Image (tube, rainbow, N blue to C red; front, side):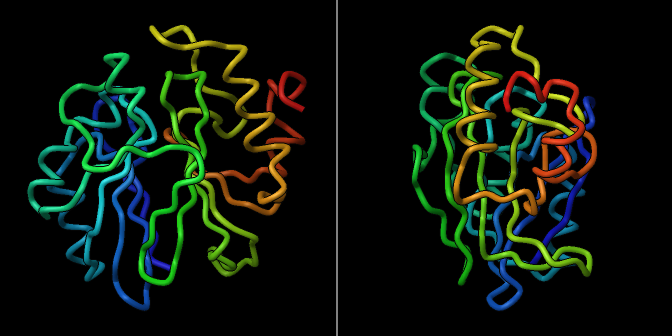
Length: 210
């Protein structure tokens, strides 16, 4: 697996570079700033970018979308609800993503979940192809955007946010998803990495989504 977390932009957003070591293909998730750092990291990894993915359209996750997609001449993929609602109108998607869509990255697959609450078209992406992380055995990896964080959850007081929807998304799409186990790494849009199991046990909002 190719994996790199970069903290970018003025709000310390996590941008992820994720892909296949076998083919060197990779995607860039949420390029919210510091385009030169993202590009340099991809060059150091020897990666071949195939797409830019957005978990949602807030500026701190999208500021360098055009720069990165133009630099590599690769498609932009996100949920159309973000464009229709006006959360992100900078650039239409080359591929609109909906629940169940798959993004192929070499031999690896990212699966798409629609998880509204933080914003109308928020998405999560997960893969069951990743079985090891930092030397530890895992069942997979989840890119959660601003849905759920280490010990907390995303804000729902922005325009288009909905707290009830947010808790419902966490409960139904993450915690009660048969494809996802406690031993999944959660890579969120801000702060550190965690696991589904850790958030079931310690998240301060767990009573609202368990």
